Image (cartoon, rainbow, N blue to C red):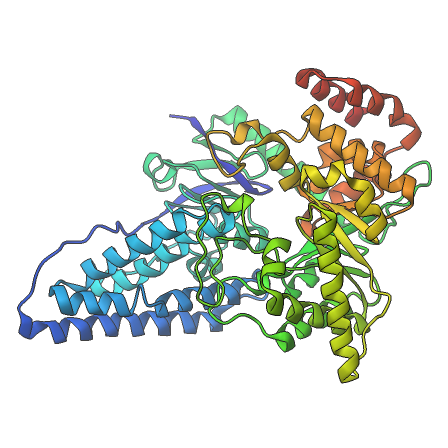
Length: 575
């Protein structure tokens, strides 16, 4: 019987192959009380399972594939860190001792408590780290119960296998890499899950959040996976199979043709040069930046240096990371955003709790509240500016007061470097993110105080429409083409252009081809996006004549009906 499932698209591409089911350890364990004289042995059994898991994770470094995502080592470090967390290690041992319970039960109880803490986080990335906790505990439980980990059965060489799992960790994914799975499907996960990141880094079509795929599919069922649309067709009929084989060939041909555009300047048909920059999280991301021909780094999310660690990076570690990117770009612009951490992130052992962290102490608010941490980062950024074209970007600014305080911190950081005789670029540019409606509405203040602007469309849309885009019940209301969003985008871009101050878009809209001509029509000349999206956007730029889209752009801005706006945007993209 043929049927179709819909999930969250993570990594584009079309795969046709056969189901290979990966078993998932059900984290349901028995609870029993043991005699006091056996407690010591139970703790020893727990310790042995923990140590065996540590060794297993450490050995995975030896199997790291050459083209694994740059974050793979960080994933392993995170899982090792979770093993060492007192909630998993120390608290479990104490529970075994005090309650005389079995190790499996103690570990499960501590995991549930830790997962409950992660579920309270408002930030999607941090909330999804609960999956890492479960994956680590699952490994330990496998040791305690004597169950094997994820191991694929023999793979028939002529078959393209599609991995189907309830959930799978990045470490397990790397272990299975040698089997060359054509696609990855999971019941759980989101677009920012670690497995999703790994799949993108391995250039493997991936769909997550399918809910019941593992339950509904059988081993060796024939599948079609459309990673770009989030569609999975189980046991397709012959006509559908033929159609998707054709689409698969067309997709591969199109991807190969796009590679030819790597060195082609991004210039519209009427001769307007467009800057296409890349967003990165870590220095290792530069390889993909080179591969796709980006002309700069438009957004270096420095907070990824701070995540998933007990000890925050000191000035020297930060300086080394920023310098590596600055030197690697060989004079091309590198815009580094100061850390965009939130109230739901544990810093130096202090857990901040807020009823709505997205509106709480995060980004520049947290920077100003933690002056020493902020000064440390600013010193590292300034030092790195001697090794390349570094710019500093400040997130979540809302008022002139925050701008003035930030600029004073930069002055202080410069003075401290001057006192020590440490060189830096004295003319380094300072920019601000426009991601709060208040900032867009008082833009003249930002233009006077700052050297450049960067529009963060993800948060701008979320805050303008009062929609939590991580909440499944309202995520469908998250609308980049809402008339209010179009008004704000037009206002910010046109005001910046009129004042002669550079402006870019670094949110998801910049990397979606459906919005490329609209943004060009609004006057945008600098985009920053995930490297993998860059060549498709460049192709659109190369086939666009700006004078030809002016009329449709004006009609879009005048329209108030959402359906009419979408109709006009579709016309814009076929003009």
